[in-house]
Length: 317
Image (tube, rainbow, N blue to C red; front, side, top):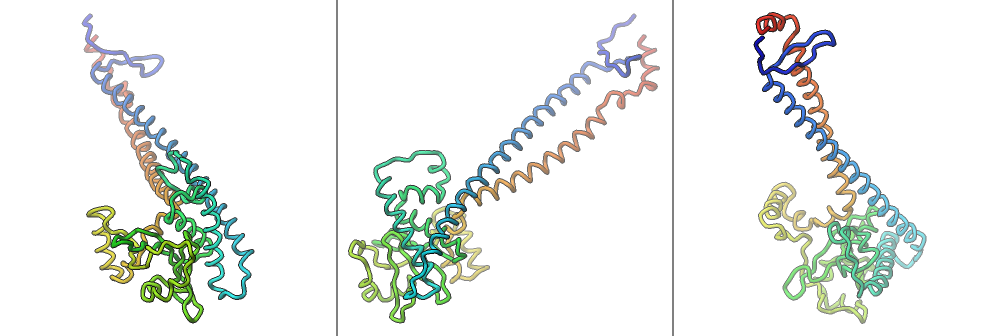
């Protein structure tokens, strides 16, 4: 009997038919690749799901901390000598200066090296250590004022002809912007008793500098301000700025603070990861459906029906 290089593959417990070995290896190779891709997809889904849980827990922890701080501010905001709309701002300013100032002294000579503080740099790290100087103080104040739905922006002060030499916060009030410096516990009042903005202080420094504390660094003279460093990421940031000029106008763009977008970092990371996770789920389901279809099409019982193969088998025999 002629022996061909065929491999027996069972159609049923009763009968068998032969398929070429090269076709068998192709089918097997497809199955192995499919198995590897399934493993990768399962791993990515699990990894992203774990990240979602982590970011959610960190964001929830951060929110609860600032909710507690906001509750303390509300309970202590009872100074009737201050305008009601400004009392929360000033109490928040004093609290952040007090808490961050004391912790900055404790951690000044201590190194806190961890992947979370180095890579993510969350506001909880600033709250805990006070190590990032004026920028960290401002992040904590801005995050706290966010619990009161107060609009804020980060003002990068011009010092020695360079922007970013000192960072302060401007908070939106019914009477306009109010500049707050948590590093020195500084705010300014206009002659009518309302809080002054950065522009007010810059326009009349000789008047407002009389309200400064003794330990203030007079190099911070409110000589100029920018709210976003549009040169930090070459090409991309200038393009974004030009698009915003076209869509929002020059005035709104120049006063736009990019740091506001990354204030709640864990919330931002959660939303980004969730978007990627949903796309991966869609891709996984789509791939699963296509694999099911391929499995049906590559089934030898369908490719080589028993009745159609019987004449071939008789010829070979």
